[in-house]
Amino acid sequence: MSAILEIDHVTRRFAGLVAVSDVSFALNEGEILGVIGPNGAGKTTLVSLISGTLTPSSGDIRFQGQSITSLPAFRRARLGIGRTFQIMRPFPGLSVLDNVAVGALFGHGEESTALQEAREKARRHLEFVGLGRFADQRADELGGPGRKRLELAKALAMEPKLLLCDEVMAGLNHVEIDEVIDVIRKVRDSGITVLVIEHVIKAIKSLSDRLLVLHHGEKIADGEPDVVLSDKTVVEAYLGKRRA
Ligand SMILES: Nc1ncnc2c1ncn2[C@@H]1O[C@H](COP(=O)(O)OP(=O)(O)OP(=O)(O)O)[C@@H](O)[C@H]1O
Ligand SMILES: [Mg+2]
Image (tube, rainbow, N blue to C red):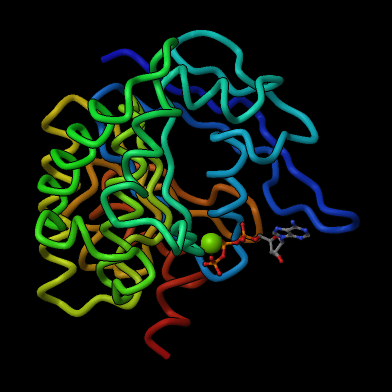
């Protein structure tokens, strides 16, 4: 197994606050890595540091062996790093299809793709995430669960090698969660490496090959889901509080 992503002693400060504190880990190609931790633990900040909407205060991030730490987000997207946003922001006036087509147009390729081709691709991605029949509806008419799937389709339309999912199951019911788990498994089976942030422990446990736990910006555990979830430090820092 080779590492597609290496996080090397990465720290991110905001004024007096250390949101991500000296975190190191590697993500292997074809792996699904789950990232959990309490609110404010630094999970979204970590995703932003990898996708390039934030830069680290110190440390290095490598993608396929190349340092990407100083690259802007759009360059990282073109190298193959895709993400979803915890706070969803579809282009409200555009159709569901065209929201995804935008991803296909501006994503991966060196040359701009013709709109027609982008729409065909978008339609395939919408089918993939189960939104095919909503393609011609306006994006702002979608409910919460639909918007979560739209986030996934938009990110996939950029044809990533690595997909970063920030709470794509939040607010979904059990049936919808199982459907999104299936979609993420299909994503991985199509050859994409996945990092998934989630608070739904049952879901992340069944989905992840490996689990990493953040707490106050620090990595406090990293390993097999069963082992990590029964780790004393993890139970005290996160799981205990959730059950209380
Ligand atoms: N742009 C910013 N400016 C200042 N502080 C920030 C900024 N972004 C995040 N923070 C702070 O950094 C810490 C980590 O935030 P982050 O959003 O990464 O947490 P999280 O683990 O994603 O939490 P949640 O589970 O609630 O989504 C928090 O204390 C947050 O208030
Ligand atoms: Mg977050």
